[in-house]
Length: 566
Image 1 (cartoon, rainbow, N blue to C red):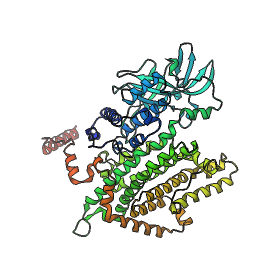
Image 2: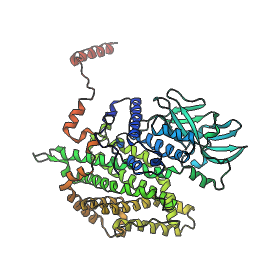
Image 3: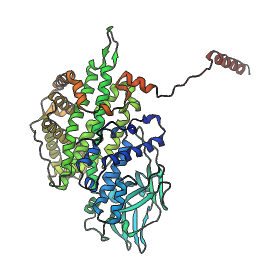
Image 4: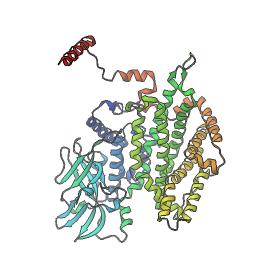
């Protein structure tokens, strides 16, 4: 699974965005999204069947440079087009899908509301059937749609899939999606209101919005689907409506893997060329310090392992030979385990690059913040893990062990599951207060542990070099050092010794391992070399002038003297 880009990185991704205004950055993100849509040239089949091309987009190494661009594409391709293609036998929807595939119109996905996030099943927006069509309405502020980008500020028509409660003859017939034009190139459509939100802290800006509807008349054809009947099982029907969300759960961690490759390269390059003078006259490389070295080799190893695992596990998440619960489980496992390792590694690399690591032009601080958004997008990780872990504990289905199951990491995953079952047996019911206190807090770590073991096994099959496998294993052990000490017989001293041996084995081949990440040509952080920094410095505004400090001092002195006399 490789990027669709086969030549040089497009100039649109060379732009030093931190020097642009907020709106200029947002406009650039839409331009980049258009570029990628044209470059990948998706077909209906690509999106409907989540082809290799679809997954290649999630692993495009340019996306971490602009996560706002990815946010646009994730909703546009994965959710909006992804939902519509099931209905492309309708001529009107087929025409709309062509517009969306060409990026002549941007698709947004309006599901959750300001008052209904994790409980989006309980949304309040209504679509009432009348003789003229449907009346789409936001009944109160809490029912406003949160938070997709719906403003008309960037010259792009937008259309939304809006989830609303279908009301027929005063009866609530359940949640359905409706096709709703949002804005043309210049302004909102009548009755649709978009309130632009402030930017999210430390992330690539986008025109995120609160969207409301004031008795908007929609044609009968706006409804996706033919039936007006109330579903026999409303919750099951709701999951049928949002069937692209589980696919998105597995898709959104893709850019995190690529981002970690960026960070591994950036941090390692900086640590190798940066030297300090200590008590000896000869400058020494930062990489000679164990604390610096560990953060870098850990990032390299984790990035390499996740990069070979991700393309295989997402295929399992859409394998129609598996039951739906298991497919969704693989998506959740993928997201949880990647996000956990990403946040750990990205944070350590960033702080080991000192003050320079905190600046936006050096990528890492912004990307760490972007990671928090991924944790929440397409299903909050903790909530997803609680649901999945409960189903595993209750035996509703199981995750097959990895091909290489005789590993410390799989023992860990099985051990956590066994302990959770023992706790649950004392709780009486998985919904009890005792289970709430003792079982739910184990869910995220338990689910992530399964993913860590699956990734390790996939990396063995992919012939990832043993020094990197050993560092990856140590990195995962660090996440739950107490368990490995208590249950696997690895004392804290033994764990440190393993880390030292593993990291030392990586260092002689670090240049090779960095090349193997195949990320250097996409990196834009000037911290990677003195030459890159000096070139970047020329782009920054420099202030100078002809003010006379001595003269200013005299003026201040005279002013202070006069004030004192008064």
